Length: 395
Image 1 (cartoon, rainbow, N blue to C red):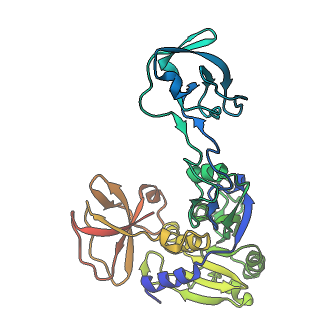
Image 2: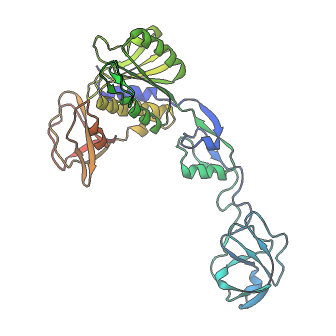
Image 3: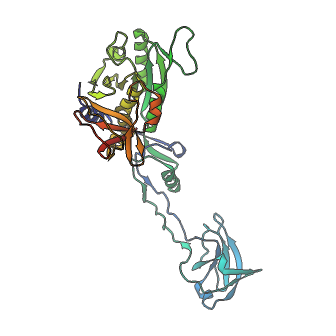
């Protein structure tokens, strides 16, 4: 059995980004950028109007009020085909290319239209209301650095850069196997035996997606070693990471490790001195990483958050550290002393900090809904009262 720190370090070593791939921009949303987004064009490419108004020459506006002939119109995507001659102006709208000869755009509120002419009521002061070429970005500029998730803002930048395709880190493929004769698909109870709804895989799948992974399948299997071995052979061929829930302890029907034995399972660690979740293990079989989670729902989700989340984040290109952002906050409740195993108390945010929730049972599921943080308690920590600083991780 190893410590939490040792296990976390081993996970960080495993969590190296997968190779990159090129995908269409529409499919890149939420992916981790592998190469920088470099602009293929200058924006704006020419002087464009920043307001609705009239394009005019400064020399014509010195003696305002003044009447100028309106010789055309300019719209975004439909430029005025001509030159702005002395004594004339062009009706222009936001985003339109400014006609040749334009010194400024006078906002429409400062102009009175009189048929084919426009009366400029005052000599303009202040800005030109024009966006200069390259004032947003120039061709060759790096708009987004690699290693970040493509969110709404970055997707806009990629499209503005005129990129049809972008390079992203391949999403780690994850296959989840839930084991146990007692497990039923939710809403479809067995008529042959008493059972319980299988719940853990749904939470694990959500966590995997949140940290950049792709769930390729979820399987629910009984405690038949031969069937489990067959499933293991198929799983390692389809996934970068295989997650097995249940069967991680030492009972007669705990086959989580045994099912991968024919695939030359190499354990990276087995059992960690933590509570809950001591049976957690990680190994490698036929090129795939295998993560064994406890079967109890709270234990499974706590260990998934502590170990699977940083593993997936690293493989996906976010870096494992993105999922291990421990920070100190004030305790607004009380905590008893910690025993000889590092303990992760389920807690919730309060106005002044965090407090532990009441139900800390490793099989509790309703209590999970109340939890949004894990409170870290190191071995031998004394009891803590309101105001003490504690380490927390978003849960």
